[in-house]
Image 1 (cartoon, rainbow, N blue to C red):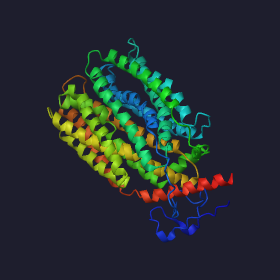
Image 2: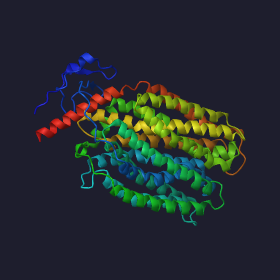
Image 3: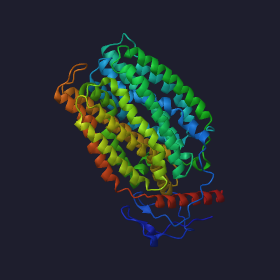
Image 4: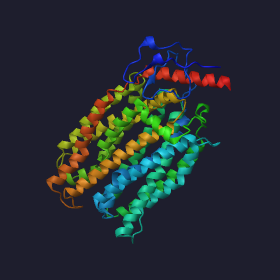
Length: 504
């Protein structure tokens, strides 16, 4: 069955809104292959009724098996994000600037490894499915690198210790990439329904938050300021690594196989895959917003223990403050999912960014003894962050559907690698800046700090997030892929697949 291409008159500039008069009849579906026009020119989707999505609901068993390994993964990741810089400076006695540089170097390495893992994951052909194969492969390396990070031999010192830290940090983030990108891609592939995608990533976020709670309740108080920090870090990381490896292997076995429409639909050229991501106007804007936001908040987790210990003089409250961040995040997830089913998701996300700016702005006014203000900031930020972590993936799914509409390919891995890279690079860059700023301001571990040091800590923890989130919020006002347009795009993609199946 032949399918006539959409007429060139129906192609409009990316900055324009498609007028209804330009939409062609539902039978003119266009061609599934790449358009000859640039990808930042959008071909207006025709008025096609959205395909019924009954039977696409993701069952609770699948949700649990998809999300469960993320609890131990999150615990271990938060240990690295929140505690490792403090552990490295106060226990291993390495300079904060050096540790910040190591983390930044790991993000530069991710700039190479993330796109490769995303592309290879998209192109993998295996009876287990292109995502489950990589989940199995990540279990043992991830567990091993976690234990390596937190258990350097006691007799290592100087350059040998520094080398151990460099290798372990790079190896950990590489192993985590091998797990995280296919895992996120699989979540988007479990259902084509935006609401179901939001449910899947709501479950994912709940599991992540449970792991964060574990990190804050168990790991943080046992490592930050504890005389037995080194031994405790080894114990927690070893148990956590074993639980993580077992949960990945067991839960992956019970996950469903790959959806038929995704089989063999990955990009055939890695350079073309990267080019498609960059040329997708919706992806470009989303990448910028995502980068500027994570850049702003990139050092907050690592700097919060410094803020509480040296500025507020309440080191014992580190875990409590993070709990007041995590609990509102967990409890608000159903609320954001409910709102996302009724209102434009990108507008809700912008509103949540505004709340985050307020929450982080409060940190600028911190001083000794103001623990209540820190708790209030944590509650606001936890509540607001849950919106992007839940509804953001549904929006990303719409952007990937738009790419399929333009190219005829399914590149979840490549797109998620790009977003993952933006997150890692932004975080790593800010941690590096914070580490060198802290060292340059005259920071001395385990001593009373000067006002210059205290203001540096407050600026990195509150000021930078406040400014960057506001920039991201205003930039995101240009995002134009609304739910109606996304539904029409999914309808075209659905019709093309059905038409292709009929010709086989």
